[in-house]
Length: 360
Image (cartoon, rainbow, N blue to C red; front, side, top):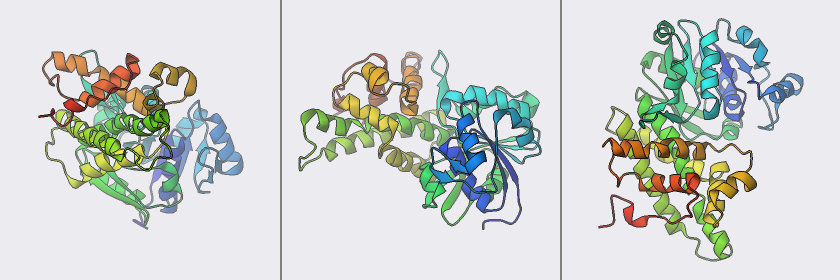
């Protein structure tokens, strides 16, 4: 085990990723409390009665104690680490909840990925959104960190090797958090570039949507049994996504030099997210020629798609940022096209000549 000092951790949100992270913590002997949101009642009921998380399909560590939302104050009483485990759609709600239970000296640790934008196109990472619900003195009296990197929840829970980065402004807190989580399968690096890392984690979901186009085109053309499978297409889209993800990190972070850890969070996470999931499935429908409005309202009605939400938020910032001269009209051509697809219902028509700094 990574360390002998035992800590007390409470997590709000009992989705699959938040729950998967209870495994290394519990296995290292820490006290872990898992609090469901108002949408998680059935999950918490299942854990309390059977020990099984219904969406993970796994029995969680027996030492993890599950709480309904009404018990949040009890669950967070005296903890060392307060974790946000909701998705990006619930970040404002979780900010309100954490502000009621976080106390000075705690470490606030987020697994929530995404960004928000104002009317002028200013983009902020989600830990900053959570902060705005805290009194200023409380913001200064806790530390703020987040986990990023390629991490499929079920693989963590079944002990498949996983490499992640814990990022934050306070190195001492990062070291302590890393020691809490490290196991022989959960490998943790640290970085004080929280903005750059969080930006990479948020924007990779955008390009996972585009990763579905390749298979959709093959569906439309009846090419599923063909020998040649359009890997050239997919690799070029992936590479342009990497270009734009890197530009976002350089645009929003003070750190202009990319480290190997940035590549894990950028390239690594984009790779694993492009291998499947809801964002890729939505992109596949679009690649097959189905307007996004039909994908949203019929084929994937009611399905939460983080990548689509990121395209809407971050893509919506392109016009005001361009107008202000922060970025050029030629910057982010793939994101701009994806925004047209999901907001304006435009058909897929890849702007190849604009990729890689323009065809020349």
